[in-house]
Length: 607
Image (cartoon, rainbow, N blue to C red; front, side):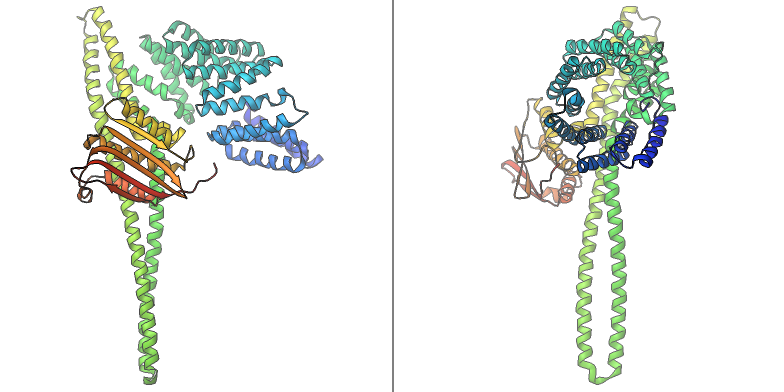
């Protein structure tokens, strides 16, 4: 019931929990039941609530020595972290569950096969596909020995996904078909329909539209009594719309696309899963000659792509602004306090001066003390004021950088898409012409598809410039390697990356700032230095990290950055300051080679 009638399941679990606590107290039975409540919260994406419950059960299991429940608690915590996209933590929990189970003499493979399968899922999400396949095959073997049809269907479906990612489509199709057969025999209608959706979209990508559409229609068919949940239905109708559009059946494509739009209106929380739908709608309206709607959907598609990164940048700037405002208010209060202290000191000096001539020496001493104290206080306040101005400059530079990035993006979209849209308009007007021959119209449709493909590539390039997906999913070093791959593909400049004694992932803010420094400076070198080789070296020693960027291009007068009105060097300086680092530039005119060096404190921490 947790998966089909969630609220009713939650109500029943809570009723039984109350009865169990009343009759047997917080015994093992109580925690076994509580485990189901945690699973309910996890399935319904209330991951914080499920994390609290699973952690409580794990703590009590360790205390009481309930080994089997302890293993399941580690597995449940792994699923919780998997659903929260914390894949490394998920692997750690699954691994702990598996280790405990394999050490237990009373444990059998059937007791821990789910832990193995979940290890495969976590590795799959980290793009460690070869490792994921190893775990899925191991889980499949155990489930085959147990004749567990439902588990066999799950393992085969996971293997189909992995082989599709690797591009081994024949293997993917083989395992998808096995999964469909096992799911049907086991009566698992949810998995049966979901695999039809996956396999159907795979055939469509291969260009086998007839077979793909048959599978997608089975996925959407409810004659067996199964009704897909909104998320699954959105996936299926989006794939159907894209398929019919590729076949040139625009009206049918639009029908399924409109069905997807209706689903989004009813379930706004599914907006992040509508990229395929938005892209397809844009293409549909471009083909129909409705460029206004086509552009509107294209903008929605682009906005959805960059939303996560925009939110992260906005959150970072908001944090800086709040911190700056608080410190500014504190400084204003401190200045007012200093002024009041100065007035009080003056009154006291006058009082003692008129009180008695004999206390003149003491008065002078007191006055001198207050003067010195006030001067010191003012000096401290001036230092703080300067620090605030520097931070204000950081914020201003960040805002200017953001505006500059928006202008650049607007220019890229205008320049890149203007010519494509003009070409599309020309093709569409010719398609509308009654005088054009059918053979020529067929060629025009083919050209239109090519233009749309080029527009899609242009969108990918713009999104990469905003924030590379590799940086978020795999970290700074992987993002640098991706950047090097893109640059080296031109075979004009060679970018070499070298990193030693560093973990795979750094703090998120540290990774973003380091990548932006590298990206900004490498772009400068590509534009102005006429370099053939660029080397990026990152090292760590004695709690100090070094980022060194070397090139063999033309040297220059570094003083030009002090008078430049451009934001490039300001952005690099700002990001270095945010790392509490030191920025140095070594170059001279008429000299080959330039070095940019950033040193900053870094203490390695456990993941």
